[in-house]
Image 1 (tube, rainbow, N blue to C red):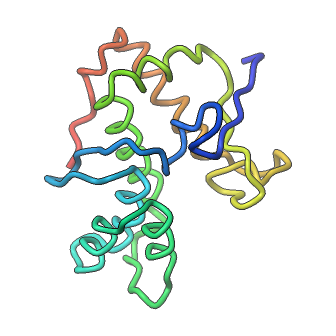
Image 2 (image 1 turned 180 degrees about the vertical axis):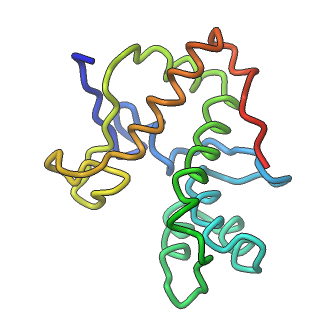
Length: 158
């Protein structure tokens, strides 16, 4: 992995990697306006808050609602959040042919969500963060390449 690709803002280069990018996904029997909507709503799966977040008018509002700690966060969130993000990303990059091809086209580049705003999903702005979003994208890219770029051998999502 010699080359690195940095992304964050959905309106800049590689912005389609952002969970705020305007690419709807279908999961759990519902259409979600963005992967951010899905991710944030799953913090409250099975409650009315899930639907409220799914119907938020923007990914920014969905994020704000999902981070509102006056809402009862599901107890297993820390254990399941990576799998929830993996489901959202898998849906996004298998349900949108153009995005699948763009992801595959990054080859073996290291994908890095570059932001000082997040040291778990991103790199913390200085490379000290976990970059979990980038790591999951690279995992999905590897699987898509292994599956012959078809994306038809998707994980069966709940």
